[in-house]
Length: 163
Length: 459
Image (cartoon, rainbow over all chains, first blue to last red; front, side, top):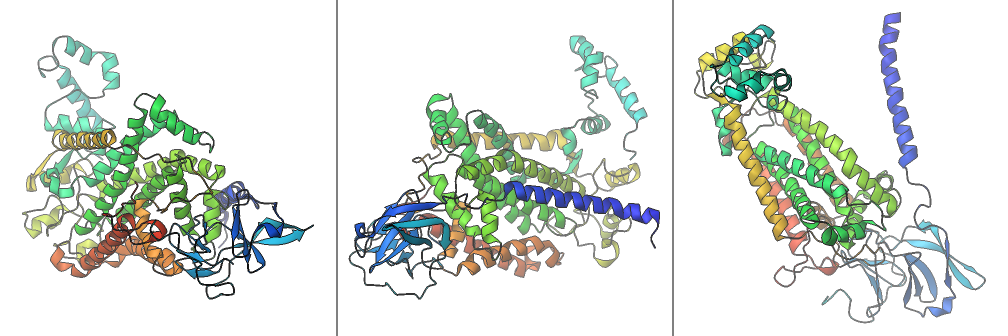
């Protein structure tokens, strides 16, 4: 039965709940990561012919690799999808080899082996006036394991062995 | 509560202040002790009688954390190995050294690393304080884990102490939070990549993982925002949380009473007949009265928290209790000094690591999470991330959380709780093996690298 006493009794609880909700909301608004707070923005990578087929070049400002996989270009985020380590390109094997936990990716960033759940993540790549431009605000998850479009045998010894 | 009335107190005070009643309060010391100023600070005189000592405990904010009297068995080192107490001492050391370090540290990606170098070379005893802080932090994680294991094996999480076990887990989580946030602050390669690996574990939480990770580090990679967040968590939020949890945890130790291993009903009960034992415990209305046998650990009422009748009744029944001051406090003082000596020795002998300045473009080989997360990292290298990164840790944590409510077996002796002990020991063995493999047997590319060929191990 609704009496004034009951109304007051539940009223302060509702007030308390509202206060908690308000605190949660304001905290979320204050602390939530802003979109594009990472590197963000478009980064010009230069003309395509400076990266020969089967090699990759590092761009520090975007923390990405520009890889030429059989004439097709990919802007691969250096962050391993496994645990975020920076994945270097191994010149001798022609593959990406993560130093942390041993994930290996082919020249197109496709998963070959190791604990990574998928291939290397890719930034959207466009050509503007003959120059490749990577949009670092637009990251696409790498292909699932099983993709082997660019898989070739290693061109030489792995960088991890004997390290 | 009628333990000692105002009237008693006045009487005692008057007695104690009578010259000649207490040989320590004669001459000039007596005059000081009788002065208005002294008595305004110290509310009680020193009086060497049981009541005087009890009064001393009641009226002293520091002493009142302890019971006035404790069962004699509590004095034995083997009773608890003092692990909870050692953890508290380490926390105090960490507070003191941490405040000192704050004077010399700026939470900025451009200044932090330089501050660490300056601390090492340009601040008197700066390196030593940092070493002590770091080794105390590692030790605290270890001691808290050992404390958890000790409480488990003693069966001390059982009724009525279930909730204190839960509080203990909250304290464990806070301790790990402390250690993990502190790990980033030096802003060297070791901190940067260990925290990168550690925070990316959160990514594997289904649905909300990335959001939680982004909220924690304030973006999608570790940067200035992360450093500031971790700093604020480390020096303000977590100390507050740990202080609160610790307060309630210790208060519950007092209120729930000391745990007993053998089949008595309370700390006072060893060697009692069942009737006498049942007579002296359990407040009215406690369900343990009717549905359990006298072989269950019951609730212990200590002097000062029960009414006068039952206090005197207890004292008539058994007098195996001793005064906490000095008997227990002296032992605690020795343990505290020993702990200080240990971390000081570690700090003098081993320097806390400081690698190169954090470089987001260059990952050192191998990048390992802090040692208490390395087992998880090792697990992740074998199984699907959803299983190893989320299902296993979540199940383990939930299992621990619910343990005192699921394990309704009242027995505390090992022979009557084989299942619980086998499961627990199994978990410990798995965790230790994974940690040792990850810590000592993994090299670049997470390849199998035995420690005798090359040791990739950092604390």
